[in-house]
Length: 150
Image 1: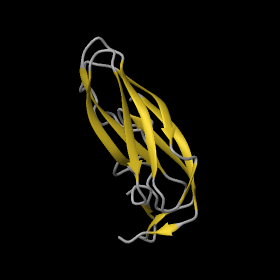
Image 2: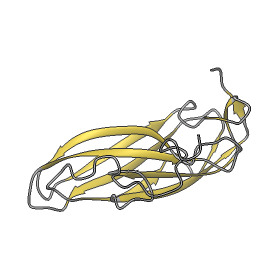
Image 3: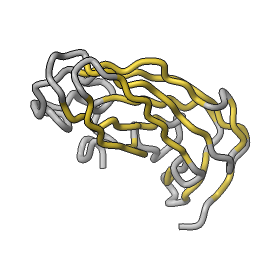
Image 4: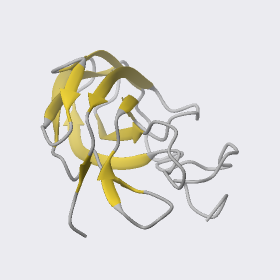
C-alpha cells in the first residue's frame, strides 16, 4: 500500500482534500486533548476553535487526523472525524471530536486490529497534515495494548 492511498503516501499531494473550494480563509487554534495519557480501551476528546478570518461568509470542513506510533503496517495518518460548518465573516466556532477505542486502533502488519502503546499525534484542520491547509496539532500517549475484534 506504500504511496497508494493518503494513509501511506509519503509525498505532498498536488491537490489535497478541499483544495480551492472556498473564497473564505480559516484558522485553527486552541487544540485541547482531554488527557495527555490514556489507557488502551478508553476514549478521549479533542477540541479546537475554527475562525473565519476573511470578509466573506464561508463553509469549512474541519478534519481530525490521527498519526500512530511506529508499528509495522500502521498507516502514516488516518482520518478519524470531520464536521462541516458555516461561519459568518469573522466568526469563531468550537469543534469537538470524540475518539473511541476503534478510532484509536490500527491494523498491524499481521492483520490484527489493536490499540498500540506509544505516542500519538492528532491534527485538526482544513486538510491533511503536511499540506498547506490551516491546522493545529497536539500529542497524547497510550499506555497498555488492547486487541479489538474485526
